Length: 106
Image 1 (cartoon, one colour):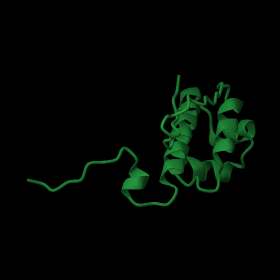
Image 2 (tube, helix red, strand yellow):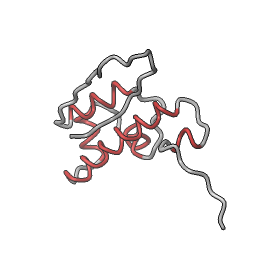
Image 3 (tube, helix red, strand yellow):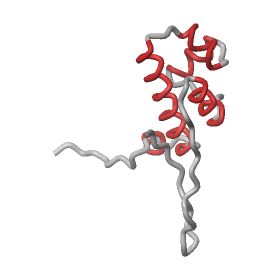
């Protein structure tokens, strides 16, 4: 039998990386940005002009190097690509329990 470990659903946490939850959210946002770019057949140069990032930074972001880009900037990029972005705050958890942050695409 092959020894294996069940994933938590967050590869960044599984690898023991700092800020794993934030990195998972960013990776999902970047994946959606990449999906939109590919669907539209745009070049990185065209996209960079629209979303307001230098092309080299866009290239790094699309290749998984997005630590220096805030979640707010990624949400702004999605809005500039014509997507509506909504932030929904859920109901209170009782007894007091830590909430979680997730990315959901409509």
